[in-house]
Amino acid sequence: MSLSTSVMENDNCTQPLTELLAGDSSPINEKHYKPEPGMLQYENFSSQPPQSTVVTILQDDPPIKDYVLFSVFNIMIANVCCLGFLALVFSVKCRDRKLAGDRHAARSYSATACLLNITTTILTILFFILVSYFVITSLPPLPSLAHNLNAILYGN
Image (cartoon, rainbow, N blue to C red; front, side, top):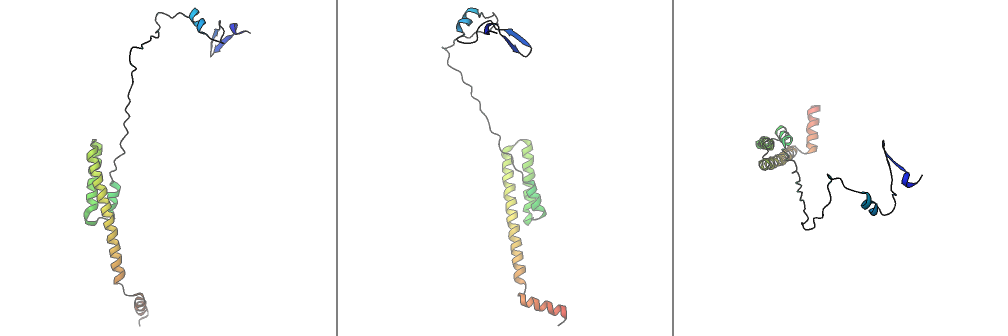
């Protein structure tokens, strides 16, 4: 089987090859190729400057946190001077502004809610530390406490 009479098979189509596939094919194309009238032809537009396309990709802003759960925790556990309630108010305002599409106001309310939540948590921790300190220091010394407990239990 020679190259000039071989058959090229592609899926269910067969097309006989009439020219050799090796070497420079430019003389073959010049002799036998004639473009159809409806086909586009390449034209050399060397006089025109090259055109460029600029694509601007905007990064999505990170999501705005509304700190609602942190505010609810502070209301339930650590509502010092009602700061937990104020933090919840700002958290809800932040969520409302986020849903309305006002990202600037949502960021502002979010920062305020975060600050109030952190302040409430720190004040609550300080409050528990101070209460624990005063409770511990108001107790009598340990040997005296043990003697008083023995006296109460055994009636001495």
